[in-house]
Image (cartoon, rainbow, N blue to C red; front, side, top):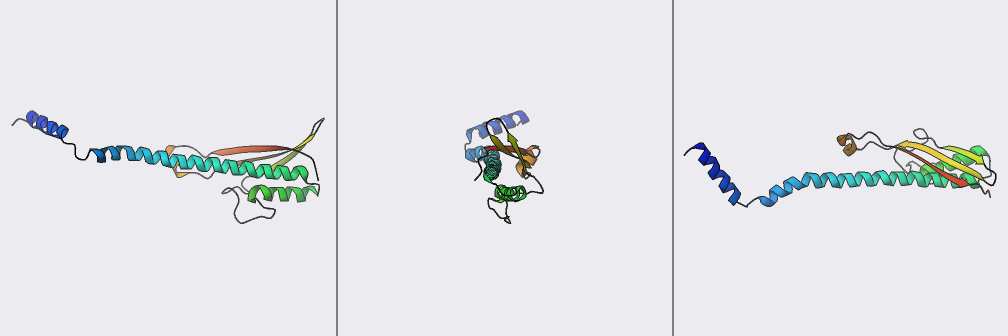
Length: 153
């Protein structure tokens, strides 16, 4: 038997066999589906963190727009509301590593002809994800702000 005939015979036999076809398809699809699943989880986490930061800034700006105590007291309370969702500092911030030392919040009050507006601004680097690192995506920085009209209380 010549090698060419042997290879042709083996190839013909391989084409006729259908056992293990589902396993081959699964082995081809599994890595792609796994990456898609982890990607959806990572992007979902990223958008959740961004939404928590924006909610915190909204709470802080809303408090600053209504607060008429001393400026230092108002800013400290507003920062606690932003970072922790509470008037007092908590052990866990809303977003991992979103703390005053890492991502400070700045408040700016601007007066216009008709109204005064308080703006709360922050920049935060999200915790580095293993999937994004594997894909070569650098750390993601979120810059967010919220404007609130001053009405006092």
